[in-house]
Image 1 (cartoon, rainbow, N blue to C red):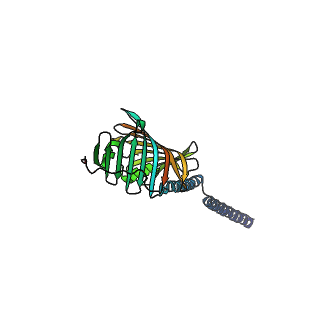
Image 2 (image 1 turned 60 degrees about the vertical axis):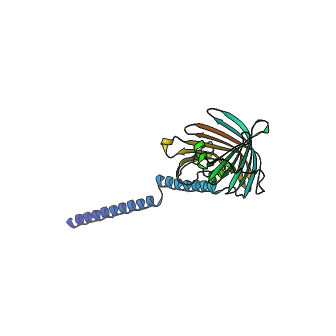
Image 3 (image 1 turned 90 degrees about the horizontal axis):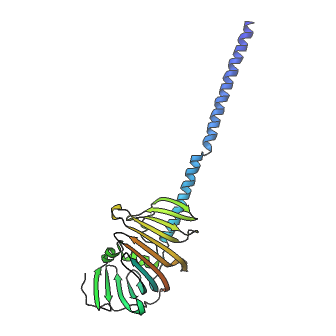
Length: 275
């Protein structure tokens, strides 16, 4: 009888141990199975990294896709407004890429009020009515417009290429009204890019000075794009600059061509003091 009891006890102990081992194995297997399948956080992180990579690709494409040309001629309407006055002009423009540009501005009745010659380090202003000529370093434009413009920046601005896109350091991005909005941190400005619905072109660029103390912002809108050399050329631009003063500029291209002989050149007077 005692032997039977001992045998039953032994069997119960073995069964209990076996059941315990089966449970442990099942727990480990369950744990391994959970580790094999990504959890919600991992899936979300993967989706975020995938979308960030996609946005970087789109922004890089916009920043690097520029209209290549050797020369440009254009006729455009310019609207100009400050806190003190506003006016409209017709401008004729000729650009020799990476070299110089000629600008002739006509006011009412087609009278030429100003001619400007700009190169990489200086600007010459000719006033035919008063027969005056002024010569300034290129930094003169920075003082007037309150934006650190280099010759290349001016050229890109006129041609419609993105400006101050010196960094693809993405701060944030979102889609609003079916348009991708991307915030970038550049050397001089924090840039907010707003793209078209198909992400093929820039429709708005908002610049905020990295140095908050300067209180300097610039908002550029691009519209009425037309295809030039397989690149979108915006016929209309509006530029709103806020610094110590407010300046609004509208540009509406009436005629333009690329890679043809310069059409609107003029002679630069030799006299005139540099200021």
